[in-house]
Image 1 (cartoon, rainbow, N blue to C red):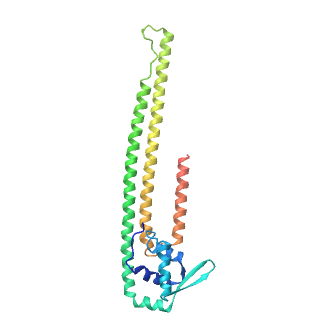
Image 2: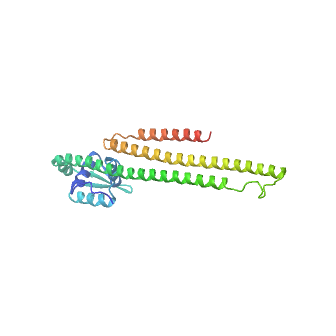
Length: 241
């Protein structure tokens, strides 16, 4: 459910301010609002279009067809309305700042909860892997030896027993080594998940903070994509050595 980030009547005035920058169609207005809120708030079409219709009825905006799109433009009456309520618009900008901070805090809390869950899953997986390793070792070490029941085995029997014991020890060592390696691998994967989650949280918070100040450019996104691709390539090269 979309949080009520605008007070009654504030969204209407904010739409006029956006149209005063330049004409836009409905989807562009939705995108502009989402960008102003750093992606933490995105109004639905059912929220935007009824207000645009009302503004048109009042003569504050006009609409024109541009192919399959309807473009809305502010009128002189709309600019006069906006100028007469400039002090209200300044207050709305402050509300937007507070709303972005509040919504970002909510996102951060959700991510923190997800991080706690991930840590708990990591600890649980590590304990389960350790228990599995112990069970595997006990099962292997408890397998039957190579000596007979009477203790009077000939040299062939002794050799067989020795071979059986050596094979059992080798099997136990191999099994234990494989289990330990798998345990370490599972732990490393979970730790990598934790690192990625922390990185994502930090970057999302930074982006939302800067987006409200209109400081996130397409070049920044392209740089992020390039650097992440480089990190992934380096990681794959390390894993495949």
